[in-house]
Length: 245
Image 1 (cartoon, rainbow, N blue to C red):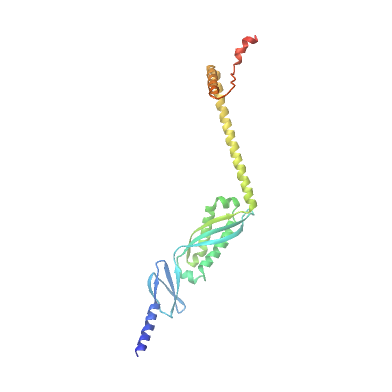
Image 2 (cartoon, rainbow, N blue to C red):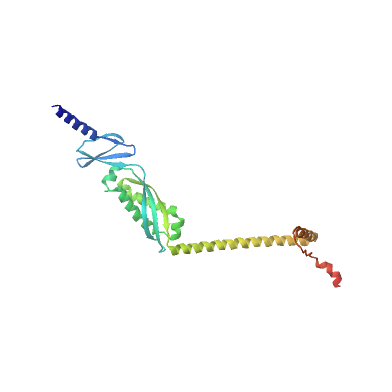
């Protein structure tokens, strides 16, 4: 008799323990009773009926999912390899379980197809320079597609764009040519500015001849400061006019 009581008590304790579930703050339990959707429970202590209720845990935290690299042909017929990352979270756990078999896998597949179709609508230059615009369009399309599943896509970011080797070489040559062009423009601007300053100096010296003599003395001072064995003194040609007569 005692063994029967102990057995019944143990079975009752097991049933009670199995009927209690602890649901964390970021989790929800989707409860099905006799195969039909009953309700979403949690967080905290949740009581279920063993053998009658079937439960599925769903996290409501933001999920970070990498989109595998996709081979895409841009609008200007350039083949690139693009990958991205998607940030999404479950807003309605019941729809995420009922409406789709595996919402994570479904979102991943939807992100891959959306990435290929959207990137193919842009040129290569737009893909490299207007990435924020492409991210916003990806987010809008993917959020609308996953909304029936109770999922909210908060952001989609293109991580890396892998270009063909010939395209990389062409872009490197273009960048080098652009740097050379800028260097020549800067050098030409410097020469133009220097010539303008020299012209102003020449005009100033023409008005005041004494400045030429001061410049001559300054040049002699600079030559004498150097350790030179031979010094050539420039003599103005005016001093030889009297001998030429």
